[in-house]
Amino acid sequence: MGDDPASRVYVNNKKKACEELGIYSEEYALAADTSEDELLELIDKLNGKKEISGILVQLPLPQHISEQNVINAINPKKDVDAFHPVNVGKIMTGNFDFVPCTPAGVMAPITQSRPAPRGKDCVVVGRSNIVGKPQAMLLLHQNGTVTICHSRTKDLAEKTKKADILVAAVGIPNFITGDMIKEGAVVIDVGINRLADKKLVGDVDFESAQTVAGAITPVPGGVGPMTIAMLMKNTIKAAEINR
Ligand code: GUN
Image (cartoon, rainbow, N blue to C red):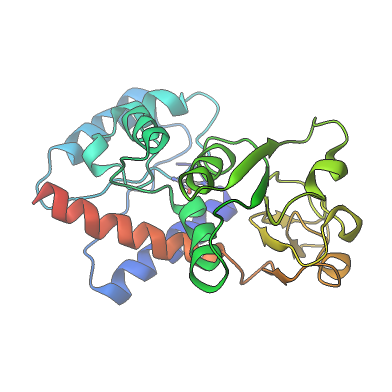
């Protein structure tokens, strides 16, 4: 809904990924002044449409729309973002169908090319429903010892410096600097921040961090593309579930 330029880019990338994989997709680009009722009606229609397995409402939504009402309206079996309370609850218990896309994309490099989080000190900086909270759960399910920090955490550097695995998802440009990172740590940067000069930077100050970290993901080109890969995975799972 509306004309958020970042949302436009994300939606285009998601459509392109569908095309590349041969997944049929429909886009509904609604005007910013569309009412909540109209949006809920559309979701209801798609909930009942047999050839649609997955529904994603790109966030953020305009001020007059309740994001929670919208998320609640999506059939949990078609909720490929895993934002519906039913799916959020399932992530908490560890028995889930859909993994939230961004946290799942963060887990991929951690679990595939590095020693597993088992027993490791994992620090997540950020507590959003989209990234921070589910991220902490996924690390916990892999037997990590997880600390959730955020912009108001006191003595933040003291906590981040203990992290074997550090995930930055706080949405503040260059917030985590090299002096806050433990030597050899795995640092995953989820931030996508646009500076006044249009430059795209993460939540981690890459320059200073790369000299300390054992491994670090850049922005752009780090875990961003993984988010879409995970969305495609959820969509295929949704097709199987709804068949
Ligand atoms: N806006 C920013 N990230 C996301 C996401 O993962 N899903 C949706 N639907 N909107 C977003």
